[in-house]
Length: 483
Image 1: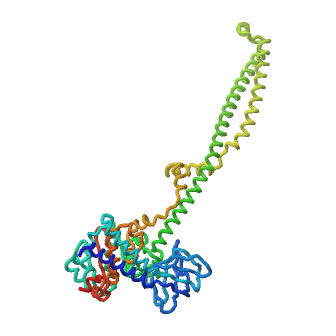
Image 2: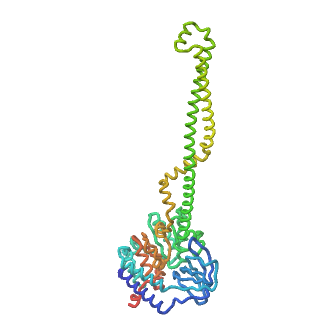
Image 3: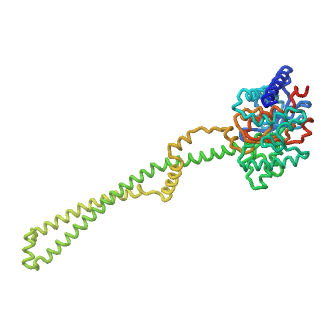
């Protein structure tokens, strides 16, 4: 049996179960539920729900929580729990606590969504890679796992099995394998049967990565909110996908705010320095004029000095010298006229100098640039040029922040979730991975495992206790069980 055959079989089975759940009205509201907020990360909130005795909610079941007092309801996903106490991840907060809330499970909707995903995989074969899933099909077809012998063995490059009686041994081998795949730059999807197992595996992998010097916070992402605070000394809350994305976009918003402050400061300094530059240009021109006036005054003073010297010794000059002066029009009378002319010109020039100096006194403070302003402006200008100029920065600041979950999860090297979430969450229909690792695979139903296998391009790793395949009975289809 091929993967396509199994997909068809399980799609029919899920559709049949969905009709049975809807017809029997099993998704009955649960009344008198007490809710308490455990913690929040980004836009997600983890609530502890205490159900009435005898009530039960299966993990990964979508639910609606309707608080009392006409408060807005919120949607959520059951992550697990024990007895009548369950933990729910919600998308909206309903306060620190509330009593007498109503919980409406949507198991029928979950089954319908799951069946639709399998149908999409059949209808869009080019969008999914069913080659590795074909190697998994014989293993899922037989209730005891005997189909493994007819498919790829433990040493296959496409399908690898990690069977062991000891859970710690299996987890250790998976952690080593995950490190090898991360170092090989592979995108890894890890699925577990429930969220408690997912938290435990994340802790094991993170601890192993820490031991070999790898930055596990950079590579590992737990898709849902972790139920535990720490696993094996590793704080796994910070490894949550929402926490990582919230931190990333918080940093992005902070960087954007810093860029806006720099851009606003650049725009503030630009006209100020332009004004200062123009005033400096005016100051330079007035100082040049002052220098020219001073030069002219100096020349006139030299001429006045020369005329006074000539007049002082005119009577004692030799005859030929006086005749030569008179020949060029310099006699006593004309020398006095020259002296008056030079002195009147000096007076005019000194008046112009006074005006120039007054203007200089006005321009000096106007053209003065504070000591730190120019280096600050030069630094801002260099940063803006590096980022592509003011037009590019305006585009960056005007762009709306888009929390693209698909792009963000595609950049995670190792994503850990449950097989059921892969089947029912629309996000996983749009992302692809290189390797699938199924932890405690016998306890994950066949349909979610097939959906996860359809997302990988290269390799599937199945881990667990082989005896659990028959004990769990989650792999063989109903038709196989009847044979």
